[in-house]
Length: 482
Ligand code: SF4
Image (cartoon, rainbow, N blue to C red; front, side, top):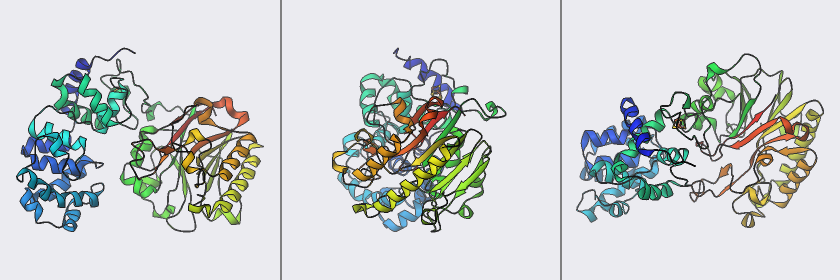
């Protein structure tokens, strides 16, 4: 692969982002030139929208503009002032401990990376940003946008932001170290977005290698009638109302599939906001559990279904809101949220009974036309489908019984579409929230698109969209010829 011309790319982008919104920490750095405020705003900004960080920083700095005034606030008061920034409780705890930690540096924010790393809540990204923005010293802050875009360009080939930082330290000319983060954060928020980057209008579109990128689809490009290839996405959202606050509607519109099926909505339709009920360009169909806040499914579809079927006609299983089927002209889409066998496999019998009933239901549909089953099957099929197979052999999701059911199901005439195209390990769709599992890619592939074997030739591609954040699962996708 030919290396991109980094001087040219960054020169073009420096001009391009001049008219973009300035990232909030840069703004605070320029406005205040105060290392304490830059540090605090950087801590607040992690996993938080700039607008929210700006408001929370403003409220906090009104009562705590320096370490001495910060020390007078309790953790509770801090939490209330900075709410609703992401992980506000943890951040309140870090801020409550900050003044004491600064005592080791005579009450001042230190300018050395190693010293900054000793402060509560300060990782490499924060420390580098403070060194660069507050002290103007060469340091490379690698925000998620820097890591992502540098990989899209093929300038680095790395798995983690830390690896990107180390590679850039060797490769990127020092004159760009301080500014590269601001440029790429603004560009990543404005044009090269994580979901549906706007390649069609990007100033780099002619030269960018676009590695691993799924550009946005333009609504205007949609033709009347059924397109030649449908894009379908399935995602266990782990609570649609929580995900709405993290930009769910923007994600749907950014990815722009023809059909977007979601599981674990954890909501009755009457609990949903209007924007969730009516996403522009899509019809919305829901199934919910009798128990509030539990299970539940939705399908957003650009195509109008012939009929919508909730459940599978079983008293035993339909009360849990685990199945929603849409019939189209040439196929059925079955959106499913399989039960979890639970710790100690206490719900294994229920799960296997559900699986068998669903298998029968799908066989009935497949006798009529193609069937696409998508959703969270709550099982990793083979050893390559999870990072730690040996230690999980007796655990829910990888027990012998669940895997044996999956073997039987596939052998009876169905295909795991991802494995039609990819036989490599290391591709997962779910990661525990604990132990930094996602950043270390200690995951499981438990979300699938399964198709009846006769329809194999109609599946054009399958992918896992592991850069889409917001849930402990990521979306999975196929392109299918209707
Ligand atoms: S062409 Fe697309 S992928 Fe490349 S930098 Fe521009 S928006 Fe990003």
